[in-house]
Image (tube, rainbow, N blue to C red; front, side):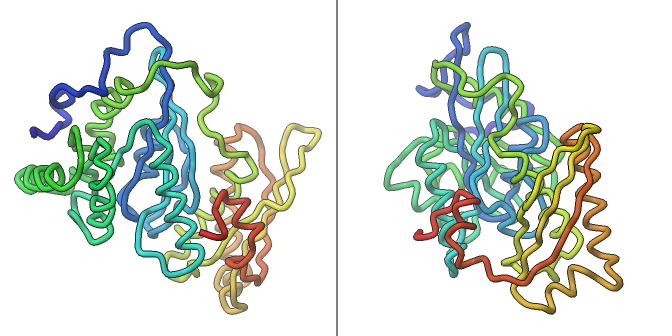
Length: 317
């Protein structure tokens, strides 16, 4: 099999790929992969706007996120799934279950591989789980801008021989290289059918949850390894104001008192910086003025079934 590179059209004939034509098309494409391979960055790139948060920290995405993209008469619904890894805690198990559920229900399966890391243990387990069903999928080698071409060709061949892939694409989700070629292949594989979302909608995520996710992203970017894995952000109140602005009150949950002190920072400086960064991005996304108020509370939410439901996760997974 010849890998599909940014300079080439999609690979050889595929029974699932049909000319787009004039019929309305709509379908789901699930993006599956190990933690931190760039799934959310790719989904945001394909949608053309931010629908999923991104950070260098692994397991940033905790639940299924839908991004909705359009091309001509076709609506592509992208399912950004949590990274697949060996679960050790209840939250881990719920995240991995959500990832496989999103992959099972989709019309198209996209498996992402970090071209720099290659086929890691986590990626190897994903490929092994795909083989028994033999379900055709598309493989995407990401971060190709950081890898020499001979290494890419070797990895592409290794991936194509390991999993049930009809095509292998090489992209950089960060820069956009090769993404248009991948998008063309995805749209061509969509089944004929009516659109499921209005033309202007780019995600199914409620604004309250999106606002909480944006703040959680800023936490990760500000604190990196200092931030506890089990921290969470919840939008407690959303108050529309007469002047068209919105007041958003959010709670950041941590497990231990010393973690609260880390987030607050000396004299409250750190939480103010987090709030400024989150507010700035929310104002751009919502296109209006935002008054953001952050509070930090100590509470272990990882055994709270209600919180799992809010995230769309199965507490009993």
